[in-house]
Image 1: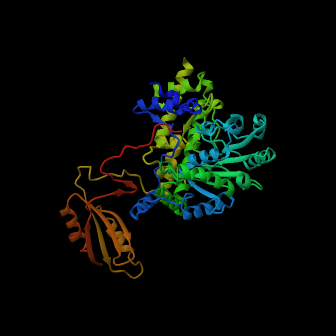
Image 2: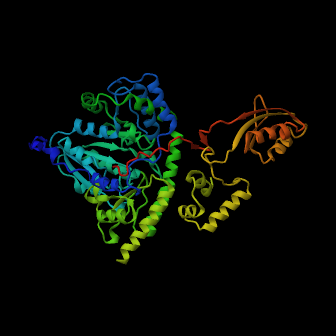
Image 3: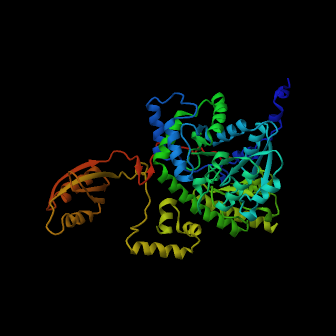
Length: 390
Length: 160
């Protein structure tokens, strides 16, 4: 029986993540050095893990309120006010989600009518376009460029804008490019959003990993709180990817709409993860800064090496991704990545997995040990030299 | 903090060639930095950290609490420094609380450690008493966890 005809059209039409294809190839290579991951190499700091264990011991095994534990929402409200300069009421303006991924999905489902247009900058995280499509929206990609260090410019926004654009999704600093915007650039984007009467979904999951200058949240700009849904989580800053814990803050009406979807689909985030998140906010800052310092030095090393090797790479101001241009090798990003994996057993991810505008680039995650980074850089160098001789 | 020192601390077992690569220095530069750190007394030395239970060396370790008579002028320093000089003594610390000096002692057998305590340590003029605690098992050494079975890192090779 051909049961594929039962699959919803908008799901059947969805391409599989390009990362998935690549994962299948890498999985067969036993001893490859992988710069292909999208998560910290550190395990969650022990005091946070211990808080999760303690929660279990204390019998914290039940549902929480749909919005999440009020203690956690209070802690988040304080944390966001202190670090991002925008104040949210814990009772009505914060929602705990299963990772920032769920928060993004909720925002899309709560705000998008079929046919609504949603702008997002690209290259971008793999779930943006599908998330919009699954909510029956129409994705409108906005390119970012290496010449701008992959910052989103208002010129690009204006060029891509079409009537009917309702939402703008931001991810600054950005996975996979490491690009971000300075305050003036964020202000320009905010002005554009007001002019076009749009809502911003701002995914700031990498904001703590900003190495130079200060991270500016668009929600903190005058007049922007009311038209921004601020999305954040614990995965990257506190090395808690597997806990699946994130949150959304925004105007009460919008959070309430998202909460409706959340309560009928997810009910609530895991209470164990919520308890651990409280600990992360209460006492996790030192460990977080230590990890950031390490990423910072590893970034300086790997980006310098890429440039020495002749793969032009901008210095990403945030995240733990380097995004070198591999087009000089004469190969496209897929062939380069596959060749590198087969001859030198180093895994990096072809930039096109993150959208059309990632063509010619590859993503290399530097959240791995110095030994691996040094060895990977040497192997990439050998591979590039080998290609030049051909 | 000195960048070379920082890398020594967080990089684990990087050798000087690797340190030089990371910091874009020449190996000679790294060695010079290390020399300066040694001369200034910040860097005492670099040595491997072993799980002695896996090494078939039969090393016996003990923590010894020592009570001392303080002296006019130097307090505990002269005696503590004298005790610290014994090869058997791996580390020595002046402590607050119920005793004065805590020393960690290594020996190739229980008898040798016992002999050190009874013949050398306790006979020193000014040593009032000793209490020897033998270490039975190590769970962590200088920041390295000692686990029964090495756990495979469960991180996926490629993730979004």
